[in-house]
Amino acid sequence: MIRVAVDARVLSGQAQRAGIAQYVAQILRAGDGAEDMQVTALSYESRQLQENAVPVEVIRRVRGVPWQSVLLPWYLAHRSFDVFHGPAFSIPPWARAKRVVTVHDLAFLRMPSTVRADTVRYLRQMVKRSVAQASAIIVPSREVQADLQEMFPRTDPARIRVIPLGADRLSGILPGGESLQGLPYFLHVGTVEPRKNLTFLLRAYAQAVRGGHLPHHLVLAGSNGWNNEDFWQVYRSFDLADRVHILGYVDDARSVRLYHEAAAYVQPSLYEGFGLGAFEALWFGCPVVATPTGGVLDVNIPGLDIVRADDPDLWAQAMIRAVEHPALPLGGRLPTWQGSRRAHQALYREVARP
Image (cartoon, rainbow, N blue to C red):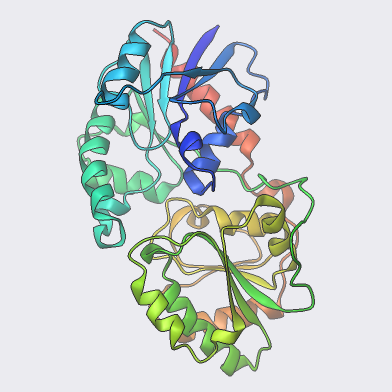
């Protein structure tokens, strides 16, 4: 039996789950035929972890003692885990178990001005060490793989594995929450932060509405993030602000309703490691307009229009095309979470071999 420990702190710390937390929750789901493997979640508390149906071991925090660099490795030294997986950029500095790390993106190096300064400082140090020490490095797209090899050129390419996230997390969940049915709209789901390029989206949306004589509104769902003063300033003076609906964080049932009812999904990001929202929208048959970054570059499917983000007019034309030519449900043509979990399990087995 292969014993795998996964750092699940992000689930204890986030009541509102963004991309990385969704990833950790999905890889911790039990099943998928891994009879030879026992996966255990490690955190400083069990809150938000019981739903994942895997054992949870709690490593209590001690005031003044670093959890990740002291308490976690001490705990691992006294347990017989074969593999430790750090699913959010970092692994402990030492452990008896073989270590695997997931690097979701290199935004903190490619465009540090879009990331909070304290996060940049932390990730510059942590990712450099983790990449050097890990037995295997998981990335969600070929773009991040290329970034990793460029920015950490001494990394053996054989240690890097591209494992995409799944598009089907919300499959089977019934739509819930308030409906916008009857109101045609473009949808974006994601934190309001610089990398999402939402100021550009407002400009492109305005041109699409005017140029295409569209009745569509714009719906933005997601938590309020950081360094987004420019977006809010433009929004406050935006002459179509009465047609822009900023919902904040929405739960899974409301997300399903939004994907089902949207005319098109828009992802104008400057940089994505994967871009989960675009894939979830495609799963529900919603056409997508996205910039050429992240996981969308690794697929070639109908309903997906990839347009660079340096020309609002080009984006406006793409948005008009998207509502004129709706997509169809794609099902098995998109990556699934079951496939992602099985790829993780296969990598754990490979790493665990003597």
